[in-house]
Image (cartoon, rainbow, N blue to C red; front, side):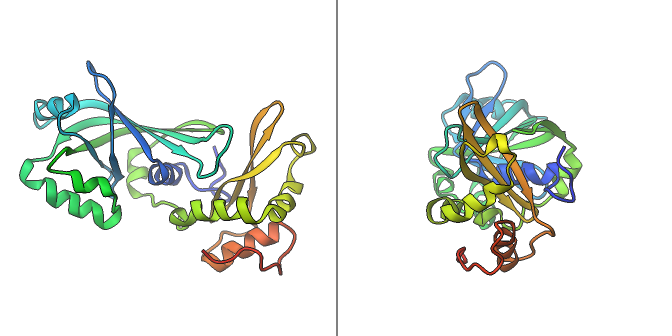
Length: 253
């Protein structure tokens, strides 16, 4: 388990992965997996999802009563870079799928749009239907292993403050600052320095490099000396790790 003093907690990592995940699938007993066009993990701890109105998932949820139907929501967090192995993390949220009354569909879509303005919400009430997944267990899997997460801790966790900027930062570093990435790679163990190095993740506690080598892919985390509090301190922390604290190479995004 990552040290919470130098890395986000597991509940925070789940929140981050859910915020970044573009692909989600709903699995329910007796039917084929259902593609999810919109998913949003709310602060209250449930997940609002949009599925095709004509899907069996919509029918099962409507016929399940107040208790809901058992289900697992699988979310896949992909790297914003073109990597040999693009998947950064998988999240499985197990619980009960409950229907949302027809008269509340558009109102709930508007509420979700305040925090997650996804274009797929425009289809709600037409070709898409909103459902709620009430979570009773959560599991995160990434290169460090698989960990379960307490639902109460997940409910109180927040995503990393730089979560919304992460993709742009990683793309900018990889495309325009190969020199900085090369400097960061000097911290890698000798056995990993012969591979192709890319920035894989960044948060207030540090950054993770992906090394694509002849023997496979390896991830290596570089912690900051202190957590970053804003964009300026995040940029400074990266430049300090790279050994060039006065370099103005990483522009604000």
